[in-house]
Amino acid sequence: MSPPVPADLPRLHTFLGGKGPGGERVASYSPFCLKAEAALRMGEIPFSTKLPSGPPRNRTGKLPCLELPGGALIEGSDAIVRWMAEARGVDLDAALGPDERRLSFAARRVVEEHLYWGVIEDRWLSDTGFPHTRRDYFRGLPAPLRAIVPPILRSRVRRDAHGQGLSRMHPDQRRQRLSEDLDLLDGVLGDKEWMFATGPSALDAVVYGIVMNVVAGPAPGLVAELLGARPRLGAHSRRLHARWFTPPLTSA
Image (cartoon, rainbow, N blue to C red):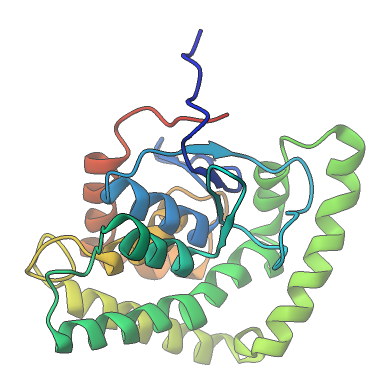
């Protein structure tokens, strides 16, 4: 029997994860939830996790969300990283200089506002990838909901992706743009252990969140193919995974 989870721990509300084709266990199939969990682990902030039993009941209707003792909610991965620095004195970017902070900000935008939509394409819009997503994302739902919910959500994701625009591009153009994203990240990393020579930072959590999701995620696709040609990024995420996700995951 697992020991009881202390009631005074912050609780990370996060989406379900699982095991990838290579046997790696990804804590969440959401890059943003995985980023938040990686940041908390890197900052050595004890927390518990909780999976949703329905649509998230917070202001944004999205996860991740960190519930503090007393009930206050910190919504979104960026807000959680900011809370770590402001409320707990744990700034993952403390060792970065001004130029590195600017580069980190720009690279994060590349991942979260552009590359992310390539993963969405592979998981939700591709007829090859969606069966994997449907099976693995929703395996915790009761049988009737497993049949009803996925196509509804797929329709909403398709609408959002259409508005963002990457999914409307010719496949060759989409490949070129996603290749440029990954080339930027691979170039920033280079032959270093972490994204910056000063040591692990918030950008490492951002990159881990999306790369590990592709490496150990449910759906094959273009981003996984492109990552295969850039092995340093996969090695980086496995290195972070081995260092901070080896301890058992705590859930409640």
